[in-house]
Each structure stands twice: as C-alpha cells, then as structure tokens.
Length: 181
Image (cartoon, rainbow, N blue to C red):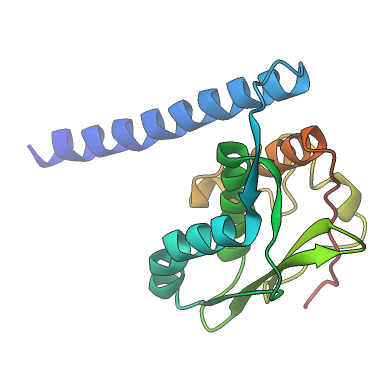
C-alpha cells in the first residue's frame, strides 16, 4: 500500500507538471501567433496588482519572504486585458518568490510616469542573474539555474509569456541584475 501511495503521488506530481507545461505552451503559441483574444478595458492597474500581491502573500509568508506593494497616489487607470495582466503580475511575483531565499524581500512598485505611461517594477533580494544570462531570460525554456526550476515546478515559459503579453499591450519588459544582489 505504501509503495502504491508513493507511486500515485509521483504520478500526480508529474501529471500536474505536464498539464502546466501544456497550458503554458498553448498560451505561448496563441500569443506568438497573435491569435490571443485581447479584451482591453480601462482598468485600475494598481488595484489589480494589489490583488495579485495579496494572493501571493500566504506563499511569501510560508517561504519566509517579506512581500510589499507600493503605488503612486494618482489613479493608474490604463487599457488592459485584465486576465492577461494578472497573469503577467502572477508570473513575475511567482518568479521573484521562487528565487528569493528565506529572510529576503520582494517589493512591487507601480505608477504612472511620463504623461500616462504605466510602469510596474518587481525587485527581489535573490541571488542575482549573471550579466551573460540577462538578455536570454525572456526566451522560452531558458533557465539561469538549470537544476532549480524543476524542483520549483516551473515550466520555463513564464517569463516568455510575460514578454509576449506585455508586447501585445504595447509595452516593454526588461530585467536588471547584479550577481549576488
């Protein structure tokens, strides 16, 4: 019975990972083909980010990571596909939390700049990314730490999905890092 239970747990873990991979591949294929339905509506981006941060607060607490959010005082109403924007926020927060060690911090800042341009910045106190890897982190399946992602259950597609969704919104995504910071 013990061996059967253990085998079922392994099968369940692998089937969840396979399902996540298939879902991410389908999402990415639609985004790359520009066949993704974008339903842009005026939305308060700061409120949406605050909701996603709140959703991740339990996970952050369990990992021993401080999670905070701050935004500019003026309303951040911009045209967004709400579900896709929440997916961007979720992927960025998930990534930041995965790579921030216990005792570290993840901060999210948002606001309108330069005459209405919306900006969201996610900072973490993780190990940093080598300069040679920075240009590639938004490529599909690219991993800086090849062994770590599987342990965390990632598909290697999250940041690529972020890049495509942001581009469909007419925006840009970038990363800055210093190894060890």
